[in-house]
Length: 225
Image (cartoon, rainbow, N blue to C red):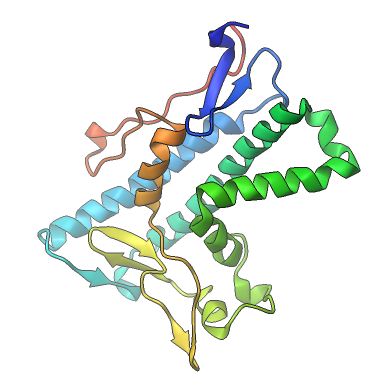
């Protein structure tokens, strides 16, 4: 097998895809999700640049009505999509290790192993986003409350909990408390997360306040030449 037949999907964990014998056919999500995540990260970074200029580089904190509605939406979309992307890499990792194909994913005894492996892989790469996605973007915690969800977490799940804490927009930076119970939603940033994941998944990609300096991820060649 030539090196050109392998696509390195995770440069840290060394997870590869053999395009001549992929474990799952038609893996188009490997191409469209990185472009979508890049677009969302750029939208948030450009908004951060506007705030940076507005405050002339001075430290500032803003929340609620001062946050453009598109920013919390971007956090929702980004967290859902990045978890899906990372889960897919985790799936390919397991299928490679087990010598399975998509046919094996419908075997009842394999489904628990797939679910567990993908979840543990995601929690190892982006634990804070996995938690936020489960409590906010996949569904609001207050619409599907768990026994261990306190009142602060339930109420914050439907708030605009995104704040600008210079120089970034962040989720969970300011904790909401009600009746003595403080939200446990994690603190994270779209742009900080994306920058951290670049080396692992999309080397050479650049996000920037200035779109002219940005560089999107390239497409994987999923079909052998």
